[in-house]
Length: 124
Image (tube, rainbow, N blue to C red; front, side, top):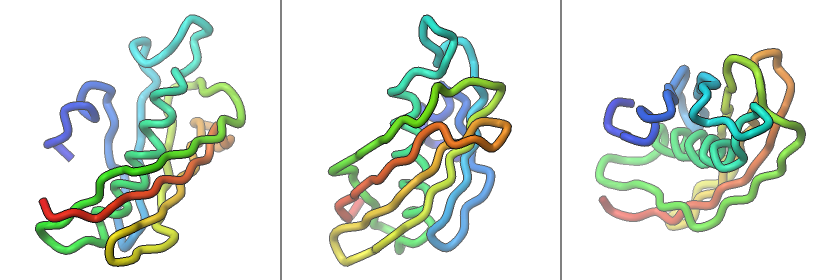
């Protein structure tokens, strides 16, 4: 996805996008870490939002999009390594509200966070 300046800034890329599911990859660069050399929690929250948002994009008709209205993240362990992977999927898609969940994993397959995101559908 080339049109998202934030994704470009942090190096976030889509690896897979299909029918309500997504896989995103984020290199762990110094600029997204905190003083303990682990990825900042705000970046992890962004990964949850991005993974669910990408999964939603794979299921919406042209001219519509989702706006985040709620986001919940549970941090399971500090995020470190060379890359993080965000795996998102849509749990329920209604006419105006969509709920999705995401799992954030490090490069050895350990879960570092899980989250839920709720979107309101809007015309673009």
